[in-house]
Image (cartoon, rainbow, N blue to C red; front, side, top):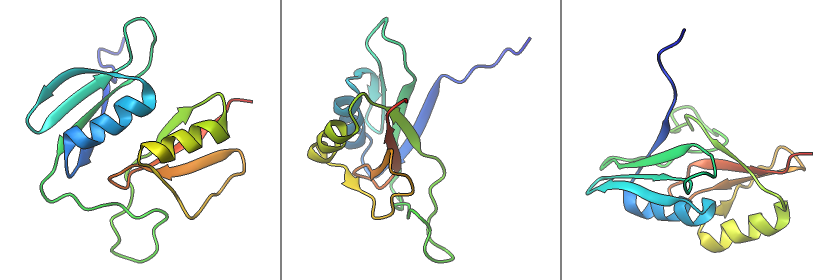
Length: 126
């Protein structure tokens, strides 16, 4: 029996509250806890989903995706967000402050960058 379970993914940012606000609006999440340099958000009760936390990192360096040159700050992970309508949700994410990544490796997935440069993918289950 394993006594450990993954509860939260934490993303560093130049401003934890700003990035938490972006993902709160994108995912329809609620703020569960906050401190001056840290915010925890999660889905409304009973809806399921993984919590996300954001921590202010004063020396935050924006990741580069895909990596272009040795020494670039590489992405350490990315979030996959399942959506019902890829085109509509891509447009909504862009309106919320995301940026469409130049490199799109798949036709049925959209790679976007959040306001701090973390890559995330929107996809539709087939």
